[in-house]
Amino acid sequence: VDSGDGIPAEAIKELYQPFFTTKSLGLGLGLPICKWIIEAHGGRLAAKNNSGGGATFFIELPIAEEQRHDRPVSDSVFG
Image (cartoon, rainbow, N blue to C red; front, side, top):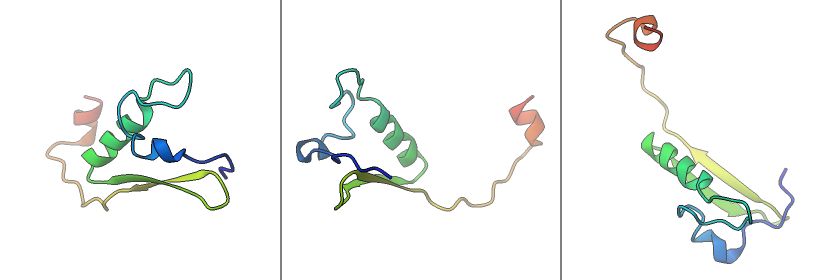
């Protein structure tokens, strides 16, 4: 359970911008990369501050349809 200060109000709009960070040693690439991967799979990444402190991140991904492989998985993955 996150009980920290949450996300500063001025940072909310910038959270997913590459190279934005509130940390002295942060690169600011983690959340933009996560958002890019999630959206590439048809999903959504969102964040909100909790009323008691801390923040919660939400990841929504669509339910996958059944995959059809033209060749055995062993050939395509380990082949």
